Length: 185
Image (cartoon, rainbow, N blue to C red):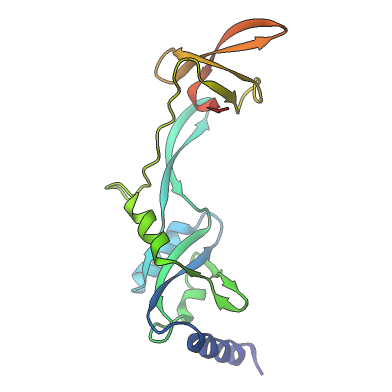
C-alpha cells in the first residue's frame, strides 16, 4: 500500500472515529511560522485561533514590548471530523503537522478556547496581570549578574528601575535593577 493510499485510509478511519460535530484541534507549526500558518489556513477557509501575549525582550541593553504566540509553534483549528477536508492542512505553508495522540488528532476542549478568547483584548492579545511589588515584598532576581539572589523590594526608582535591598557579605545593600529582572520569591 502506498503512503498516499495509507494516508487516505487513515484519514477515512480517523474521520469515523472523530465526533460528527466541530471541535478544536491542535496544529503544530514550523519554527517561527505560526502567523504564516494562521494566514494560510484562514485564506483556505478554516477557522483558526492563535493566542498572543505581550512580552518584554531585551535588545541592545533595553527592554522592548513584543507580541508573540502564547504557545510557540502551536495554533488551534476548528474542524468537523466528517465534512471538513483535512488533507490540505498538512501541506499548508507554515504547518508542520496536526498533533496526534494514539493516531487520532488531538482534540482541544471548547471551554479552553472560550477561556483563552475571553482573556483577549481588542488587539487579540491575552491580558496578563501586571507584576507589581509592594514595599517589603520578597523578590528574586532572575537575570543579570545578581541572578538567583533574593531580596526585599524597596520601591520604584524610575520608569523601568527598582530598588532592592540585598544582603551581600553580611551587609544590607540597596541595588538598582531593571524591573524586568524581578519575580516574586
